[in-house]
Picture 1 (cartoon, rainbow, N blue to C red):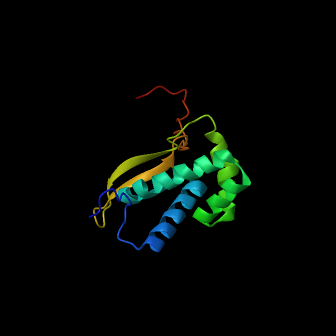
Picture 2 (picture 1 turned 90 degrees about the vertical axis):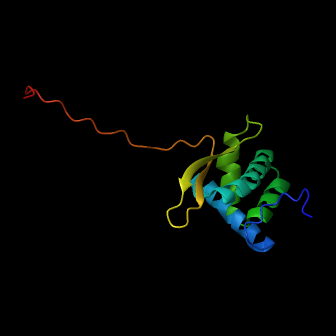
Picture 3 (picture 1 turned 135 degrees about the vertical axis):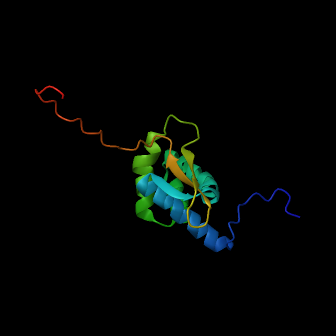
Length: 136
C-alpha cells in the first residue's frame, strides 16, 4: 500500500528524477522562468522553495546543502546573491505555476514555473508619429 507516500514519481527512477528536478530548478534560477509539464512543475516547486529558504539563511552550511541538492556551484552562488535576497521579507510562496494548456504533440498539460517577483519585459508598442496632414 502507498499510504502517505507523496513523492511524484514521474515515471522515472529515483536518481533520474532527482537529477531532472535539480536541473529544472537550476534552469529556474538561471532563467527565472521555465516552461515544462504541469506534473514536473508541481514536483519541482517544493525543491525550489526549500532552496530559497536555504539561500535566505546564507551560512556556509546552507550553501553546502544547496550545492549537494543542485550540484552546480555557479547556480548556487546566483541563488544566494541574487534570488534569495529578493525574498528576505517573504515567509514563503516564492514560486508560482501558470497553467498554459495542452502541448500540441502529446496533449500533456504545460505550465510556466516562475518566481513570484518575475516580470516579463515586453517592449511597448511603437506609436506611429502623428503627421500634420488631415485624415482622408
